[in-house]
Figure 1 (cartoon, helix red, strand yellow):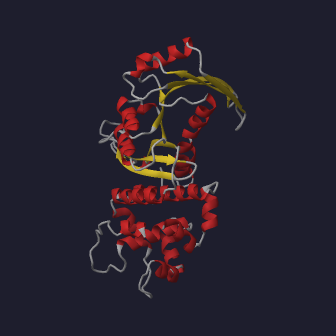
Figure 2: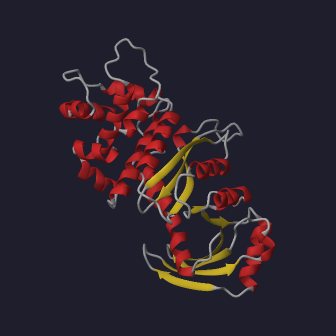
Figure 3: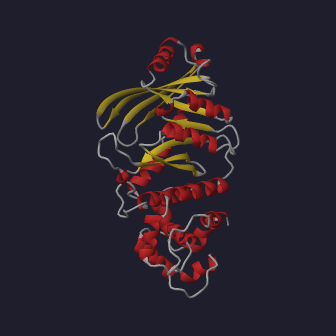
Length: 364
């Protein structure tokens, strides 16, 4: 089993005396129990006791030993270094990911607010998880921890793109305006993939060039749609232009620039907004509209779920590495829910409640 093999490679920090179960067993019980709806240390202890015979059979454990207590699950979550769990997740995710062909892979980071230290000074630091996310088939396919004070999300995203070299070429990576960097486009182009990256005024020269193109050139393609959902009335239009010649020598692989214009009312207040994008493809406006909306799935169907469903920013399970390790477990849960095609995480947890054999089969 790929997951078991990887978990066994995590160093066990505990002393041998009094240790009843190997570290990999506790971690795998924690993951299986969480997928069965037992989220929390006392809940996991109840899960291990209730399903002891099944777990012994599935994990090939000697029968009859007393099951781990809640303090054992708690100590493991607090003390295990999160980078080991991230490595296990990444190997598992790539090793079990459905074949990805011409997918939209969105990259974005999410901070875990309860890990913040240093106040609002320049010494401030917090932990973020940067994810590569496919909403339609695979969930999170790669994950990396970032310490805000020590690393930039720009470099982390470039590393993640390189780490996905094994994926079939032709994927589309979508990123927000922070990643409007020549090196990022080059990394995507070198890997044989495509990019769709937002442009804002943090790149003033680039922004003005694209804005001028949209104002003076004729669009190759145009599409619009009226959105009246969630109490709003917004007309969203997308216009596609050929990339201007002055950008082509600097921005390797660039083919199109896209203008997205939104106008309407939200919360009964009028608004208007224009956003520009760079693309290494020449697609129709309808297709770009789908891709741009698809990028926001990483916010709506991953980060929002982690915040609201799992209270990741302000979790009840604090201390040591516990908030980050639980965030990684939650990423696992969301990934498996997306792969199963279940609409929401709460619905999946209801369906999987106490279904130990089924949950175990998802992980192998």
